[in-house]
Amino acid sequence: MANEAHQVSFEDLPSEIVLQIFSSISDLPTLDHLTIVSPNAFRVFHTYGPEIIHQVANKSVIRETLVLMRCVAFIRRSMPADKIEKTFEKFLRVHVMARGQLYESWPMRQCGMPRDFPTGRWSFRNLLRGGLDKECPAHAFSAREFLVTARRTAIRAEKCLARARAQYLDRVPACPAEKICYGMMPWNDRFEGVRFAPPDGEPFTWVEMQRMWRGFWRLQLLEEIRTAEAAGRLGWRPSKDPLVPRKSFEKQYFDWMTTRDIDWGGTIHELHMAEEFVKETTGAGAAGTSDEVTAPGMRGNGMLWPAKTERTKEMKSNPVWWIRHLKNHAPGWKVAYRLTAAPGSPLRFIPMSEFRKLGVFVWDFERLKDMGLLWYTPWKPSEFPVAGGDASTIVFTWRSYLDEAVLRAADSRAKEEWEAYHDDMRSRHGFHSEEFYVVGSDWMRFVRQRMYGLYEMDWIEKARVAVAAA
Image 1 (cartoon, one colour):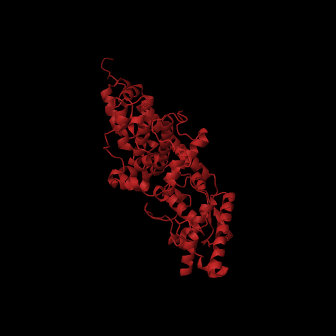
Image 2: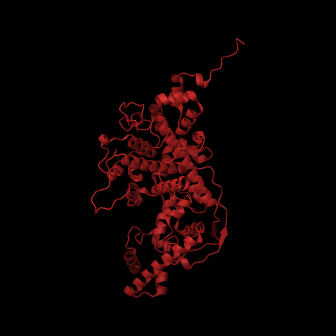
Image 3: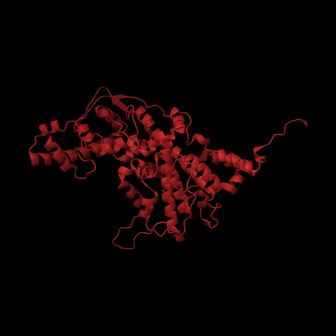
């Protein structure tokens, strides 16, 4: 018995050794899981939490989401004396940059998982209670509270994706039975389709999880702003001028992103998806209304680093390439944004909310191909993911995922718009119906060449010039 090797339990390890183990952890889910299952790890984390979160987050979180996490912690610890920014809009402009602004402000090599992050007041070492800032207020996050928030946002992100996947798996989509081409009056076109079942699509990829996770962090930031302003810690109350409409912070936030739609791309719909998920699953719009753990702890690094796809391995070995998928607009958004705005498009007037239900704005290119929504291959994140010759065939499948009532309502509005446009053209230029239909028969040609001026409200004037020139 005396010769038996003495077995040392993890619970017996001194703090110095546990800290070394913490320093080797490469993601927040594993950190969270370890502090849940080990009393010793929980004790050490309670003492050194801000430093541990600082190190782990800098190694594992992409810079865009890390900026949001820092903003969340900063707003939580804010005090009137901090004088963050004079107005809410200025705070958004300076600290909650749009996707393009964020990635253009740093070299590409620094947009992934940075090893060295600022050590000033925006560092987790100073933002969390028990860190370097000895004057950190009592209402600031503790390290444990912040880790619980990170857990909740990740779990909700996964559940939100699972709900969107269930939505599209519940549909019976179709592809056209033969090569088709929609005319400029798609409500009159009827084509035969062949039903198919989209593949299950498990697991979620790294890019999909990152898109959805940042959506929930944006929602968390909005909730922190509401709470801090209600407590009088920000000084951003709406104008007292009775002539100025009073807007909630939520309305200002969404209005600010909507007016910069081309900069934000599908990011605003990630936020909408997060908000809709929370409202429908908790009965409230606030991201922080429920602190209940919705799962017994994160499942290690598999949650934010899904481990079953080859693309995930590529992401770990070459993060700069995969960051481009987050820097550029999501492929599903590129298609929906352009074609729902294009007069004559078969997707004209389809509400974006219908596509959010299916997760179109967060899915990666491979999943969208499996769903039949994209065919373009090979594809780069900076490119438009639909080739002109395939457009009608792909749009047919997009429409097949939608309810008939949605299609009827959209087609009715598109028909009214087209008839008003046609009547206006004929009264001004004397075009006959048949002649005009021939001129505008290739709807994708007008979309491709931007002959309709998709970003202009007065599209009729733009179209009139285009057709007259033809």
